[in-house]
Length: 91
Image (tube, rainbow, N blue to C red; front, side, top):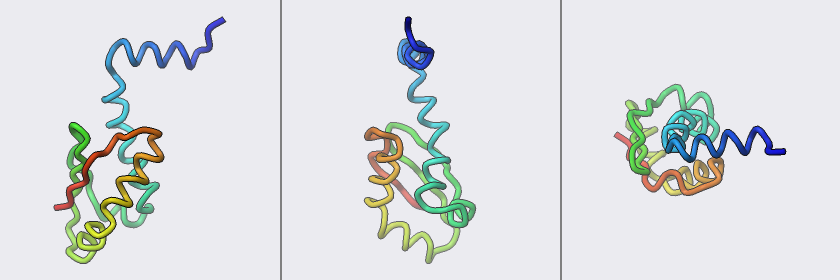
């Protein structure tokens, strides 16, 4: 007997929906990594080809996030269980 989870994974992979599924998970990962308060102060603008673009309207937060860019990228990839984010750009 085949497990339902295996059937779903196969369906997602054969339809090449895994990238779209990853895009829907990015906001959850972002909030988990930076916390709810900071996540509410930022806006995910896009996620394409491994590049996550985030709008940070407050300069001090933008500077802090830029300093932690690699740590944040690694944390998101750890939550995703794969190398999902290659680069984070803060504007």
